[in-house]
Image (tube, rainbow, N blue to C red):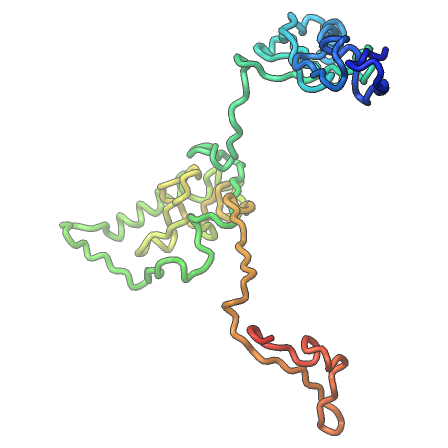
Length: 312
């Protein structure tokens, strides 16, 4: 229907694309002066039954879709219908149905159906990486604990660690103590430790991927006991702060599983060549006569004789 213009003698303008008779605020208002309503499209807003049917189909159960909570204008002829979720696993959530229609078409279609959390919805806690969730005692028999390739607790080169103590030349002076451990006491402790849970016969050691001898967290003891025993320094290992034999082992071995970096950092890239030292470079080729041939592109300085930085 063509609406009357302010000037009856003026030429009648055709309707513009996207204009809809249902979107006018007043049919008597000229097209050039009218403004669109800012509220929801009335046709889409009235399609509550269409939106509910779509929500029920998505939920798979009519009892999972509750009361209609209202509508919201998302755009031009784009309206959101919200329904309460009655599913036991999604209390406080909302079924949101997006309805729309084409210009000059009164048939409403469903664009999307999603289940969104409401203000009182029960949400999963924020994701925490496994490396931050581990706690001492979590590594059990048969478990393997990955170690990051750049774990700051491990040194990659021998120069990064303290100088190794020469155990053969170690002599316990016992300064400040009336007595020190005798050879008999040392042998009894060694036999007790080696036969117990710190030795190679422990259940966790039998299924370990490698022994403490090759583990970066194994700190060898000084003196004669250091030839066979050390102390575990991995807080996530079951033997942390305990004496273990060098042929003991567990799933927290530093090299059992080497994972990618736990804290990757970007590699800086500097495009500024100002710190480079200017150098003259000349392409020289040997010939039978001992003279250098002319370059293939002698007239091009970048091919025949590259110029150093800073020269035109």
